[in-house]
Amino acid sequence: VSKNCVELVNPVSALRSILRPDLLSGLIRFSSRNTHVEYPHRIFETGEICLKSKKNTITKQFVSVLLSGAEETFETILGILDSLFKLTKIDYSLIETDNHYYMLGRSATILIENTEVGHIGEIHPQILNNYGVEVPMVGLEFDLTKIPKLNCEEFQSN
Image 1 (cartoon, rainbow, N blue to C red):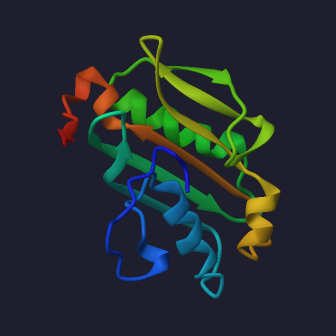
Image 2 (cartoon, rainbow, N blue to C red; image 1 turned 30 degrees about the vertical axis):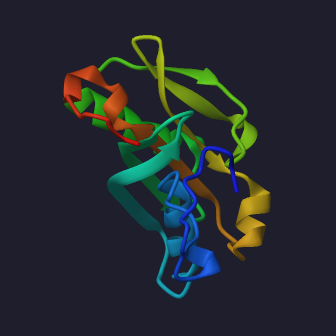
């Protein structure tokens, strides 16, 4: 369990002992449980994630997209990111990054006005192997509360 995860005091089960710190892991799990459905899989989610800060629990609004299938590449998911931000007239940039979800050299951090808002990339083969997935997956995730133009607020509780 990551130090930023919010652990529940009295969880219903060990599998549900933390509040979700991201959306992408749930999309990967969902796609891996639906391998009987014809590819490509193109799924997304918007929702709340919870993180622990020094004093508070922080709830943020996130967006995550996952594509699964033989033809999915970094360029495919980048096209979706580009379309989303063109529609909302938001300028963004990417810098290469090393993120545990993604293959080294096939991932980037998403920046808006020099602020890190998310990440994008090709899902790491070890993660695919852990879930028994035999086709490429690409994903992106970003924090709506860090994009001033969208006016989404972060919620903090003690």
